Structures are given as structure tokens and as C-alpha cells.
Amino acid sequence: MAGSGTVYVRTPGCASPRCTPGSAVQEPSGALVRPALSSVRRPVALAAVIPGRVRLCCSDQPASVPGSRIGRYSEVVTQDSSTSYRNAGVDTAAGDLAVELMKSAVSRTHGPEVVGGVGGFAGLFDVSALKSFTRPLLATSTDGVGTKVAIAQALDKHDTIGLDLVGMVVDDIVVVGAKPLFMTDYIACGRVVPQRIADIVAGIARGCAETGTALVGGETAEHPGLLGPDDYDVAGAAVGAVEADALLGAHRAVDGDVVLALESSGLHSNGYSLVRHILGKRGVGYSDRSDDLGGVVGEVLLEPTRLYTSPLLRLLASGADVHALSHVTGGGIAANLARVLPVGSWVELDRSTWSPQPVFRVLAEWGGIPLTDTEGTWNLGIGMIAVVGADAAAGVIDKLGVDGIRSWQLGTVSTSARDLTGFEQGAKGVDGGAVRLVGSYA
Image (cartoon, rainbow, N blue to C red; front, side, top):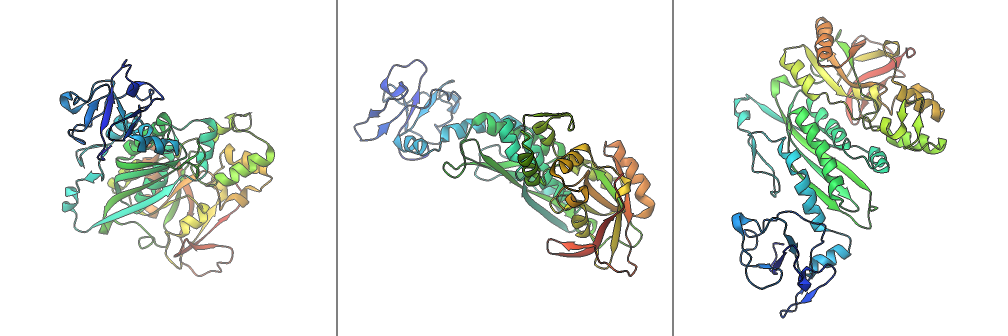
């Protein structure tokens, strides 16, 4: 709408051909003007964007634009290029409506550090607070939620997938001890359904609010022909900050440190390709009810990812002797823990200290897979791991419990010499410690 063509504004009840759904008017200039979709009813602000080119639909007189808004229930009628774009499968009006629907949820994540509002070309965040740092480090992470979106699409339930996205992105930032500052999201879809997009973003905004992260921007891209009409994928990126001397990681872990497990809420957002494969082979539908799972299959599988950021930031602020954190995502428990342990160290994690939730046991049974064979795919009930000083372990468990997170001791870090055959050693390009699971599940 910021182009050189005239923009016509539809007035409710007008009988002009320009306001008749499905009609088009040939202007003397040769421009073909078409009416907007009658389903789009929202205030529009155009005067500042295209001064002098806004016209009432049934005349060539300039529209009266009180307060820079054109009417209360007006509709924008654009030139034929937009009609061609819609015919090609891209509906910019639907995208605009989605923004209107999500705007209030996004705005609730904004504190005084956010400069400007929704809809700018770039999100702005005031980092003046970093002036108080001696050596501030920025931490950044990007991720998606994998094929969990397929279940949300199958059930037409989209209000929790955004929470999963925040968990996958922001909880990676707290692993290094950083406080998240802001996040952006990206949604690719085959067709923009405004309420669906708004539901997804509302979930992202809810997760951002819970983790103290400002949602400062995002993009919704319509990809007709590449994605099916009801298909979409989501991704996000976030930035946080940590004082250099407060950085957590392998450099802090020492012999004798205690390894604590923090309970997950379920599958979180990893291993869903295996889940879908198991259900497909067994002929189980997402809308089927399962007594074994205790509910509708798809709803159980959509259980949102637990968010650890705020409880962990409170734990760190209390002065707890935390040396390293590991987010248990792709690769499972052992591989992710190995990434935050120093080279030369090793840990044996005792399976008997916990019992994986029913969702893991049932799915493994349905797939005819030993539970131990899924350890590199699912989190099996452990969503985050903390490596803490031995004297701090009991206090950390108590403090996490106050925040509603059950935790327990899994093992102890050792640097003594031993044969490491059968251990996971480092992962994802990191030369880290060695980890293996031992014993049987409770």
C-alpha cells in the first residue's frame, strides 16, 4: 500500500461498483481497482503512508481522515496487483488482520526497554542497563519445535506451540547464565489464517512474558505451493546478556560436583518424528482416546514444554553454587550433559533415581522399542540438568521445589582415570566430558 497507486477506502453499505464484492472498475488511468474482501473489517491507518492518494470508494474526493484513521469499519481497496497476488495465493490483507489480532498479546511482553511498538521494520531494545556490566557478553540462540507442529495442525490447536518455541530458544540462553532480553519469531505457512497465526503468536508472547523476554518482532511468510494451506512451521531467535565472570559452563565444573535432574513436563519438543512413526505404524490417530496415556492422544502429546528460565535465574540470583546447566533437547540426556563437562571428566547417571513418565513408556511399548533405546531421542522425564557444588545440592533441590520443579541427584562428576568405552563423549562439535546411563529405571 506504500506504492504510487491510489488507495480507495470502502464505506459500509456503499453500492458503488468499487464496493461490490467481486467487481472491479477500470479507471481512466488504466488502473484496475478491486474491492477488499468483505470479511476484513478493521481500522486502517493510511494517511501518513500515502498522503494525498487516499480516496473514498464512491468518489474521487480525498477521504476525511480524523486522527490518521480512515473511518471505523473501513476497508482498503487496492489496485489490481494485490488481486493478482491473492490469486497467486498470498493474501496481504489476511496478514494485516493477523497482526491486529496478535498486537495486544505482543505488547504485553514489552517493558520500558522496548522502543516503539508493533509493526516497525526493526525491533528496538534499549540496552543502557549493560553499562553497569564490567564485561557484558551477549548470548543468542535460535531454534524451532520440529514436527510437533504436525500434531497441532491435525488437532487445529495452535495456542501452545508458541510456548514450546520459547522453551526451545530462551531456555538455551539461560544455560550459560544469561538473562534473556528479547526474541523474534518467524512463521512460514501455506495460507495465512489470521486467528491461527494470532493463536501461535499469543503462545509465543505468553512464554516470553513468563521468561521476562520482550517479543520485539516477527515475520509471517505465506508460501503457497510450497506448503499446504493448513501447514506451517515456526522458528525463533533470542538474545540475552551475562556478565563474563558469571558465565556458566564446563570451565566451572570440577571433580566431586553433583549432577541434578530437573523434571520435564513430558516430551517437550524433541523426538516427534519417532512419535509420529510409532503412531502411524500402530494406526493410532491424534484424536483417539487412550486409557494408557490418560486422555486424547494428540492433546497428551501437545503438553507444553516446561519453561526453566525464570526459576533458574532466581536460583542464580540467590547465590547458589551452580557451575553448569544443560538443556536436554535433541540428542538426549547423555549427549547434552557431555557438552557442558570438561574434557577428562566423566559421569555415570543412575537410571534407578527416577521413573520416566507414562507417555514415554507407552510410546516405547507401542513401538516395540526398549526404553533405553530411546535415550538418544527423548528426554525421558529430564528437561534440564544442573551441575552444582556438592555442598549446594540439597539447597538447590529445595529452592527449585519452591518454584514447582522437582529435582533429584543423578550422579557425581569424576576426573579419575578410567576406561570410557560405552560413554557419550562430547557432542555437536564440542569436545566435552563423558557420560553414560547405568542401571535400570525405577
